[in-house]
Length: 373
Image 1: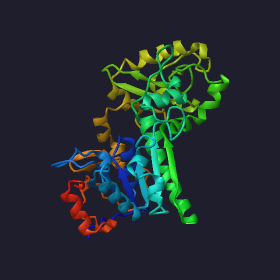
Image 2: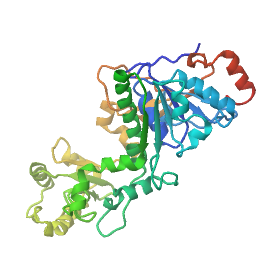
Image 3: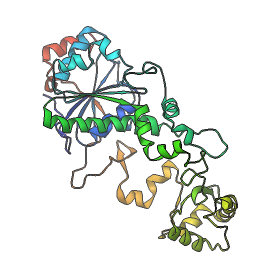
C-alpha cells in the first residue's frame, strides 16, 4: 500500500484536487505546504505527463478520464476516503460528469467540496468566460489601480486569481475543516475570484463610494503621494519609497542631504516635491543609495528583480526562497514555528490507489482500459 507521510498541522487531511487553471493548484499547494496529502487528478496523458511547477510540489498525481463513466465512478470511490475536493470547473460541469457536491456527499457526508470559479455559482455572469482582469473590473478594484491620468493598470494575476481565488479557497477549506469538528458534516464552498477581489477591497470601498478617496493615482497609497512611490536611479535601477510617517520621512531626507523641500503636507506641492526627489535619486546608482539607507528606518528599499530577490541577505537569512529539485521557489507561508520542514518534492505519479480505497482489481481494469494512468 503506497501512502504518503506528511507532517504539519494538516497532516492526515486528504485532498482530491481536480486539475485546472493556476488558482486551483495554488490552493492545493497552500494545503500541501502545511501537511495535507494532496492527490492531483489530471486527464490521462501518455509518457511522462505535463511539466511540473512550484504549485505541484508535495503532491501525488494520477491521470483519470472523468468523462468515462468508469472514471467518474472511480473518482467517487476516491472521494469516499477524502476530506476535501478542489473543483475548478464552470458551474454545472461537475454535475454533468456525475461528481458534483450532491453526488459525492451521497458517498461521503463529511466531504468538504471546494468550488472555485471566476464569477461564482450563480448570477448573470456565472457561466461566462473571464480572466483575472475581468473579475477585478467588475469588483471595482481595477478602477483604482494605475497612475493619475492613465488607464487602469492591472497587476499580473496575483490579485484576482491567486489572492481572491486560490488563497480564499484554501481559507474556506480551513474554515470548513474547523466547522466539521463541531458538526461532523462537510460543506460546499463557493469561492469566486470576484468575491475574493471585492473582499480584499474592503478597506477602501467606503472611501471610494463616498468620494473621500480621489481618482486613481492621486491618493496617499496609490503613487499619488511622492513619499510613497518608486524612483529611478542613475544606473536605471529603482528604489521603493514608503516614508509616510514624519519620523521616517525626516530620516530619509536627512540621509539624502535634502533641505528646503516643498511642504509634503500640502497636496498642491506634491508635484514639485516629486520633482526634487526624482532629481536627487537620479544622482546616484541603486547600490550607492542602498549603502546610504543601510541600517536606517527611512523605509527605502531597492526594487529587486526576481533573480536578485533570491540573493538578498534578508531573504537568504530567513529562507524566503528554497531549493526544490534544482530550482528556487518561494518557501511555504505563513511560518508555523516549531513545525518541521515540509517535503516539497515535485509531484510524482501515484501507482497504487489502495490507500485511497480503490481495489487492486478495479485499478488494474481502469489502467487496462486507459481510463487511469
